[in-house]
Image (tube, rainbow, N blue to C red):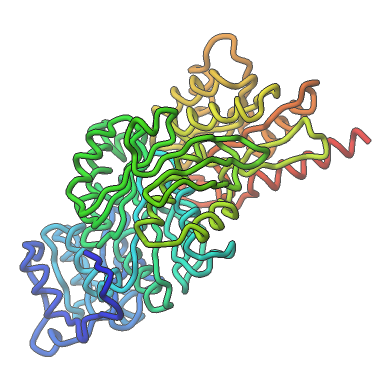
Length: 525
């Protein structure tokens, strides 16, 4: 667990012997191979599960149904000093690299997590780690924290791991997983520490908690935003109980906690958070004061492209402004304020960060030359996020037609194909179904399923090609005399579309929207 007075600590000499002893003590080591007296003293400086980042002194993890022996051969060629595998791969790996020391695990996932932490020298002890979980809002709160901590809009002074971007002071790229596998996670933490960044702000997914990606990680602050039904499928969580139980595990390794009182199941969350040394509660509800929240909001005002409110805490009452639309962002801001107070940040720094925060692809307001027409680009992709998103849009853009453009992913979260059309129909005047990371599923079949679940009488159409669908939404928006807000949902600022086994380059929704607006207005003139 992290403490505030540990700095610059790393085991002086982590070896194959010390790592094998750790795994053996934890009951995770079935046996070792070729770790003789000489090999036992080989220094270990890292751990990888991707052969492309393997390096001298690292241990390579052989895992996955699609694992190929060539991956291990490549890692050893790049300098890996040993490998970790389970019994299912032990024989084939031995044949591939017969002279390379091996650790054979009895529980590969747990062994990989503990090995990664030790191999990378537990960099979590050198930095602050802020972990954020919830069904909705993780990315927004992470970017709020990043902007507050940095005191700048560049995001270059704080590490971030999440569903949008990965930045650790060394590496910077568009994320693939919300929370990476443990070898990658600990590499990013090590990069953050070695770069001199004081803090890593990370989204902690239910999958990461369920499948032990964050085991052995000390979390200074664990923030629980909300819980709704999502990620229920044969390849994710079998039911809500499993999903919720996975989320709650974040408090088992946290020192302090922040909990939103306005969510469903708040009592259960608070009970589990009670394991932490300190818990701060937040509320943006109309009766926030009566809930006795530690940090709460009043006098919420929606302005054009921003939200202002008064925040109340042990520090007193002061005004705050969030540089994003969306009334639900008051909840997110309160969580960020509470975490900032736990970190000891001053009010001026908190206020500046919230007033300047920008989250790529999250409640991004795109205005046009015609004030009647605009767009909102947002990552909303599940029932809870739709409820919060559309409830806010209907108030903030009252009088405008609402056009919602969205799809559903392939191979997971099948309940969205029923829930999203039904929820969007409660608020929207027109729905356009299109592609959204179909993976191995047919876009046409996904859209047909959404269309079949659309309430009778709800205007909608299917356009499988996303750029064409956006072009249609623009034409439709300008056809309404009262104007319209086009809601471009789920893909946010992403530049890749998951098709089959590939991530195919694509233009962000906002870029396509602005190009189509220019075309329509040009034709008008």
